[in-house]
Length: 221
Image (cartoon, rainbow, N blue to C red; front, side, top):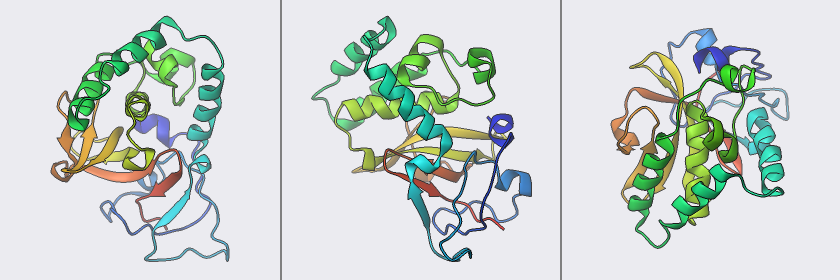
């Protein structure tokens, strides 16, 4: 993921996002490991001390994903998608945390496969149909978990695909964060248990996205 996100990245404006800032001594390469094209502020100057939020389609990977989702929805479901629909439907009516645990376990059973091996490209955010048929990397697990819970009625506003600097493993990683009555829970393909975000101090947020918005959690200069 680190190699993928560092390749071909553009950063169009200097900015400061105050919420959930990561460590201030991060190197320049790490500071642009976002895969995000950031729009210029309206007056050409970056605001300091103010959270920066944009429409989700500012993230090129997310915009491409939504196009393929529309294409997937217009065709008969594959065997993999039918199995996914069946597994998700069995969870309807269960308590939210039971749904979260079950979705995490179901999706984590898929094999990890790099985008280069799967598609011959450095970075592609897969649809659930692509991921469940072919496996994928960390953001693909998070995406399929997001849409699994969305099918179960969890509001998109409660969830974010969160890209982090994992200081414990020294890599850039993606997880799904879900806001629940007992706090924000993290669904992670690297560990079987759902965990509280508060306990994951090694995960330093870089950016996050859901259906509506893109948030940057990082200071740039």
